[in-house]
Image (cartoon, rainbow, N blue to C red; front, side, top):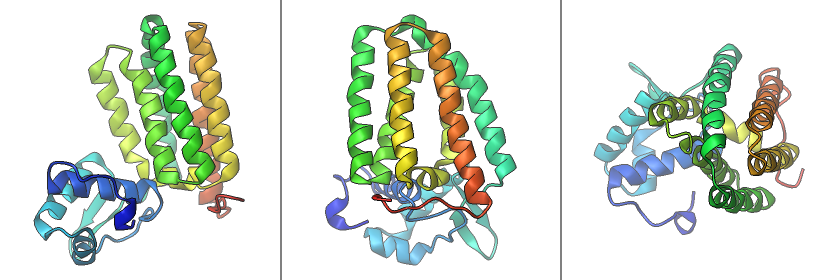
Length: 229
């Protein structure tokens, strides 16, 4: 993270710190299991320890960081079994959200998803993992929110946040980024046809590829993080 790369600061220091830590985690700068050195991070971000501690408590509640006595905070590290469980629960909940959304979605909604997908593709082409992860998240939640079921969407969001630390491991690979774009395009085509079943099946495949790639990481065959690989 360089000062020139950072977006305009949100209204409060705590929100700023939250955004920066999330961006560092999803972008792969802070990887799973990495200790968070509070003094160094506060100095790097130009804030006091107070908003940093507040932000870390929020992230701990979301399951993105963990705290241990005498060790402090670190980025959460999940087992493959944990990840499979999260993705399985997502499969169940997201299917219901997409089923409901497909019945309510309008042409304007699909056009908006198309615009977001262009942002996903631009970030992927630039090798900007954090920006791609952010645009990808917006793509999915713009769709989920059309379900008209805010409680369901909140549960899905918590599951996403629990695995944010692993997105950079997936998006760091060029082939995976290309696969994401293809799968999103398949979802868009299904939504234009109001075909909920096809959209759900495409998203199931989308998640399955992510799990398979992460299994490779856990097995020691971590994909390349070179944008031009």
